Amino acid sequence: MIITSLLDTDLYKFTMMQVVLHQFPGAQVEYRFKCRNAGAGGVGPLAPLVSEIREEIRALCTLRFQDAELAYLRSMRFIKSDFVDFLGLFRLNEKNVEVRALPSGEIDVTIQGPWLHTILFEIPVLAIINEVYFRNTQKLPDFIEGRKRLDAKIGELQAEGLEALKIADYGTRRRFSVAWHEEVLRTLNARLGSGPQGQFAGTSNVLFAMKLGLTPLGTMAHEYLQACQALGPRLRDSQVFGFESWAREYRGDLGIALSDVYGMDAFLRDFDMYFCKLFDGARHDSGDPFAWGERLIEHYKQNRVDPRTKTLIFSDSLTVPKTIELFRQFSGRCQLAFGIGTNLTNDLGYEPLQIVIKMVRCNGQPVAKLSDTPSKNMCEDEKYLAYLRQVFDISAPA
Image (cartoon, rainbow, N blue to C red; front, side):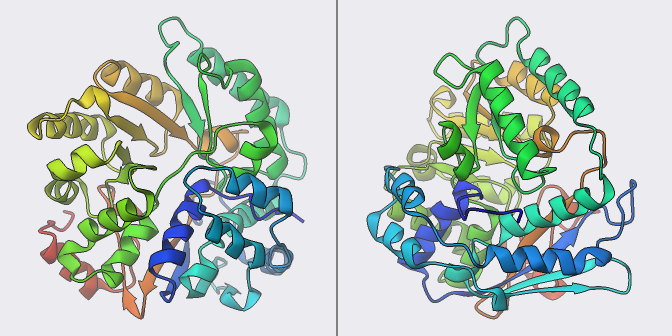
């Protein structure tokens, strides 16, 4: 059994789920799976693994939150007690997930049902697919190589002049395995330190945060702002509606805005002086991170906000060298945070699966993101994408 706790997921799933419980409890959604590097780079077909994946999902759906896990969630200042009470009754339902083998050798995964009851599927299902794939394709994993690579990363981070650089683990969904994930976290904690003087800021994984005494990290994901396309009063106002609904729930806590659901131009048009002052910062997840950082800093200045008081979070396919480069460019000009995912938790020398599960419908209508990296877009309705571009004044990719 790969997933043994419902806490083995990212914190932002709980922070979004709390908003769903309080503000959108009746929303119905659909998620779809995609492997971005299917059939390339040595990545083999997933279809032969369907029965194994289904068995692991069946086991996932038997889990309930334990008393100690609920107490841990209740201890977080931004988690409300009625939400924890709801989680005490919660379990995932297997009928909301369908996994099919396709003639191409790939798989189709569809998750459908009430948003409140399906939101916790994404991360563990992706982690299951990853671990099932790698335990079948790499029966004798080269952990020596993995440890060597991790050691090299730690050495780079401990170079002179980088003492203020802090990284976080964002790698649950694409990890090599649960056991390897835990080893990586224990090593980073021991070698980099997680206290105020340490360089390891924490992890997005709630279970390991609880187990290892680390700081759990996360705010919102793309699905939240995508769902607001169907839940808000008007499509053009959906991004503003999403930010205002978030602020209404958390009253200044968890103040990191996600900037790439409609691209940076549309984000900056909506992220006015009110939001610049209200939110603690923003997270980058597509497009050129250097250009993004420069534009955001300039935007803060234009809105009479000192960028040195705001946090810029970088989390798009980061490696340690790129993290160091970004740190050197922006250090001292703003607060900085870096979330490294696959490159931390799945770097043993094998080609990682580039897999995602994205929301594609909410309340029966299409939803989408228009990323600054076009390959990250995922929507089954081209007419809706064209309409979304028109409404937000976004040019189509060349």
